[in-house]
Image 1: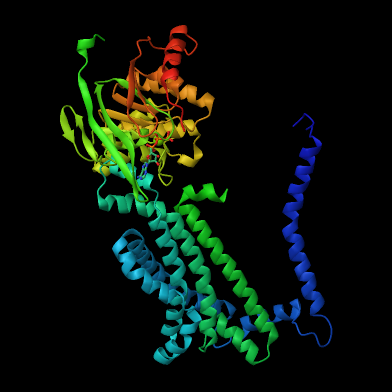
Image 2 (image 1 turned 180 degrees about the vertical axis):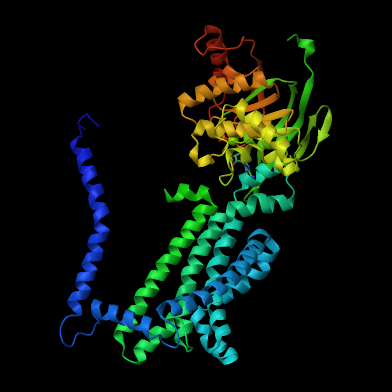
Length: 270
Length: 255
Ligand SMILES: Nc1ncnc2c1ncn2[C@@H]1O[C@H](COP(=O)(O)OP(=O)(O)OP(=O)(O)O)[C@@H](O)[C@H]1O
Ligand SMILES: [Mg+2]
């Protein structure tokens, strides 16, 4: 500390760039805010201003829509996503392990799954609505359908391409088939499985909005449609902001969970 | 050790291996017969891609030869045998396991009590000089340390034969020299019968009691050298250099 730090030009430039990189995100956020203020100015602006959006937020907190504040609606959507995701993960991981690990079930089941997967989840809406109406179950089912492909595909790939050398280590120590599956193949596929969990989570968050737009009394998807129907642009924008925030939050949570449960994957993220 | 004190520990008899590649049959190992003595450090030296790994995998039970057999204590063995362990060419440490769990993998699979495998693994972690790294993951270790884990893993479970497939092939020169000394220290402390595969003549002469020189692929035995030099050896010793030259002149160039 007493000694003056001598830096070469290059080091100094590097330090400068490091500082600039730290500031850049705030700069771009600031620019976005400025743009927002700018486009929402004037008498007949087609975009609600930050102030109007904030007021709408306070309003919905005081006068809930269909008995729910914005947080209530977010929570309603999240509940659907959670139920659907847990089912999708349980089923999808089991299915992926089955088809990725056992050749016979791969040949038998993977074509069926590929056929199912090539239909985008939203194409199921008419059938599901006709069969199950507009209640809670069809929404969850739709989210389930939307999140299943990512988790199955990733788990399948992870299990299909377990490195032979790890299995050789198992053979060397006389591991039986069960041990090879549970002690070697599944752990080695964990990072692929987590990639599936991450992708399926964002897919679920997307599909739940579509499901809620069909009808119902709760959820951010419902809220955004309600805003559109009543030309309540601040409400639309408010919903959009919350959708973005929750989406980002979900991504961060899954990432952190992965780091916590599989600390060795830090290698890739560094 | 006088000649007659040697007992044969492991025998390979007429080992042949070939693979179907496209619609041709390609030989990888041709009629390799070999006796390995108890507690001997035997080096198998051969050019790249000649079939060294194939031969070692057959001894380790990872592949089945199309002809010939492997005999341990004069009894034929089929498949992998708990008395034989391997240090793999490509490390093969499991990235999701800590050093301790990697080293203890064998006894864990065998269903040994936790207290027993812990002590066993700790003994060999100490032997290879990795105390303090038990909870580290492989990605946190240097190349030399990773290979130490591989060596400790092979030792736990207390095998009688250790197979080492170019264990130092991927290390930088400096670490490699250090590890060559380490493996001698470890082996002298915990004597086992070692089959050590390498394509490096210097390493072979530095480590081996005997050197089995393989031809270019398909591999067959060209010659077996008895290295009488006392340990520790020095790579600049005239006797060392003479043996080195003799073998080098006889060794095929890798294609
Ligand atoms: N399962 C297999 N199928 C077909 N060919 C194989 C198979 N395993 C090995 N080979 C072939 O046998 C030959 C010998 O391979 P091997 O891995 O034993 O060489 P090596 O001497 O260990 O080489 P290196 O020094 O690079 O480790 C190679 O040409 C390889 O392509
Ligand atoms: Mg090899």
